Every structure is written in structure tokens, then in C-alpha cells.
Image (cartoon, rainbow, N blue to C red; front, side, top):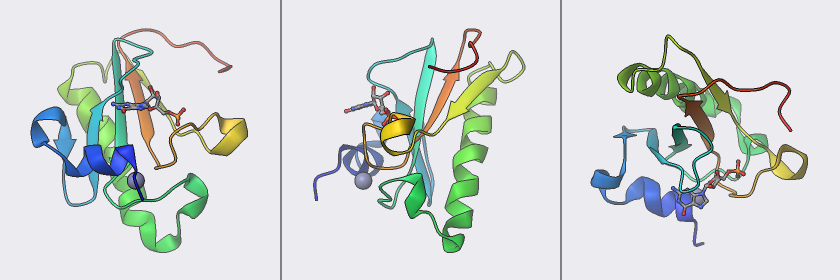
Length: 112
Ligand code: 5GP
Ligand code: ZN
């Protein structure tokens, strides 16, 4: 299996914003906000539908890493958006779970 997010997550630490035992974070190649970061589990999981109870730790780490990076990058207080797209109606295009962390500008609602 050739998965771009597996390769990025396990690749050079220099291109990552964060990595621990469970998750890795890197900048989106096509940013939709001044800060657009993708946080991924290091273990390949295709969609949110693949998460099981045993993945509770990694699921929690995704959101905790979003909060941590928002703090470190200085936009936690101003606010930010976290999004996980699932399958066709969700607009998912890369089939390795990723949490989008978007910050640095005001977001609209509802999303498109
Ligand atoms: P999705 O639509 O699946 O929720 O989001 C996929 C995201 O991955 C998009 O925002 C897209 O710009 C980003 N992306 C796709 N390919 C790459 C890549 O090779 N490197 C990085 N850093 N981001 C990518
Ligand atoms: Zn993968």
C-alpha cells in the first residue's frame, strides 16, 4: 500500500511540526488559512469509520495535538477550527484519517 500520509508521518522529522508515539502533524500542501495543519495517526486508518473503541487513545491525541499546536503557534485564544472529513459527503480526498487544524483567520459557518 502506498499512502502519502503514512510516508509523511514516518518520514523526515524536519518536515513535521510534531510527532509522538501515536500521531504526527505537518502543514497542508494547499493551505486554506494562514495556519492549516494536518494531524494524523501514525498507524494507517482509512476513514473515521475505521476507528474502534481500542483507538480511543489515538483519537484523543488528535484533538490534544490540535490544541497544543494552536497554543504553540499562538492562535489558541483568537480561535480556530478543527475538521475531519469522512468519505464522499464529507469531502474526504486522502484516505488516511487526518484532523484539519485551521487558524489565523475568522472562519465562516456553515461549511460548504
Ligand atoms: P481531505 O479533503 O481528505 O479532508 O483533505 C486532504 C488534505 O490533504 C487537503 O487539504 C490537501 O491539500 C492535503 N494534501 C493532499 N496531498 C498532500 C501532500 O502530499 N502533502 C500535504 N502536506 N498535504 C496534502
Ligand atoms: Zn496511511
